[in-house]
Length: 188
Image (cartoon, rainbow, N blue to C red; front, side, top):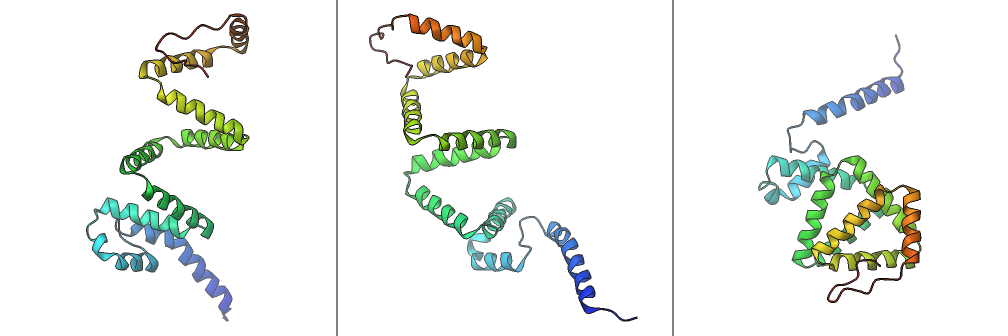
């Protein structure tokens, strides 16, 4: 029986592809599983030896993601990292805490937030600036006023479109209240 070399090579290739994920899964936790990963670890052996297995696994996961990025994505990641390094220590801590909170969100919530951010980015620049200024003013409010605004927002969200229309009509008919002495306006 005559074997055709290209069919034999294709069968080996398919076999290797089929067992590659299994072989990778059998690598010890936090240990490199490819020649590129082993070379990366060798390059940074002093630091690598100080890491826990969990930290090693995280480093390898990041390395794998980096390897899968396009040149444009890598450039953007490097720019973001440089910008992060220029932040004052307090802002760096806040950024890391925000990242931890992001990672703890369920994927469905992250997707909602990505979509909301996409809608925000698609707004005209003057509208985006207006929203940012309003948010900054909100952040500067004392905690009790911020809570008051949030409570009003929650009540507004729970109203039907008809109820909202009625509230708008009532507000348009009323003369504006004079600001309370020593208090800032909470509306924009």
